[in-house]
Amino acid sequence: MFGWFSISDICIFISLCFIFLALIGLLINRLNILISLICIELMFYGVNISLIIFSSILDDQFGSSATLFIVTVAASESAIALALLVRFFRGFSDIFLEDF
Image 1: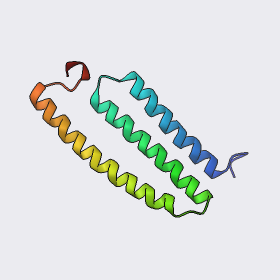
Image 2: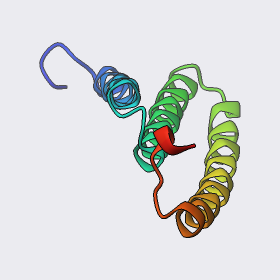
Image 3: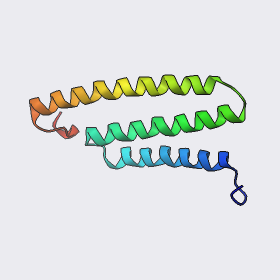
Image 4: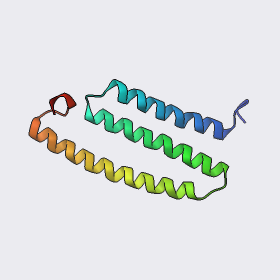
């Protein structure tokens, strides 16, 4: 396909890049809650991509259904976290972790 790499290899590489970029973002921006939430979501999406690829390689349908469940839980978690951030911002007028 693309030289020596197949499509699944490229997708696994992209998912690993998502996970490592999210880890680097968490390590660099420890004080900003919003950036931390974005990095955690990026990790979720990297794991979901790898789960879909591995389930397609193994011809297993559980990976697709588990990915749908994980995306649903991540969306609800993000909504709750953003609501809490808005509440903290209204109360403290700042969302940095050093103030809490």
